[in-house]
Length: 194
Image (cartoon, rainbow, N blue to C red; front, top):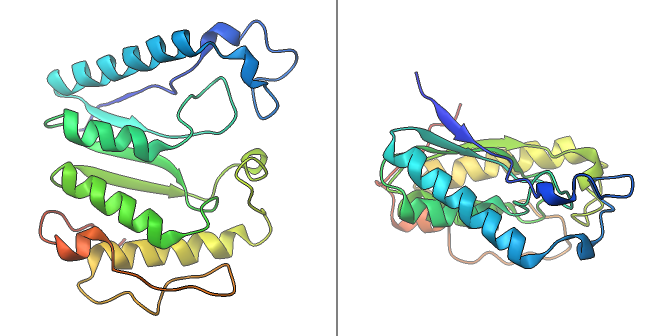
């Protein structure tokens, strides 16, 4: 059995001073950068302790909310991939329905997987409705985008084949660059498509 340490990384000082909402329309002036920095350092210290104690680590992200300061989970994953030694790093809540570029998602996750020496586990979600406008994305067609992106990311991270020409696109033109980092550094960790 695996045991995971998880925190939403809340910015709790504003919970009693939010003028009606902790999500989406909370103004930036409510955040004190010094307090936020102190809290983020505390959360990283907790993850480092979890790693030392033999626990695994679970992360997620949310946007425009005082209940979760992680607005881009790949930043936290990248830091923990390098700083932790043995903890599995589970991103359970990587909203690919919000992301316009699945190739970039695959590249970022592959790089994190390589840095962590194969300790990355991924859980993809479509995203929550109130975060689509904040992400400048349209919720219409999200399930189609989700599965298209999901299948592409899994293929990119588990296959030795070239992915050029197969990049899902949401714009009129799409150039295909180099395949994800994992394609060049395969063998460190390949995820099983399930």
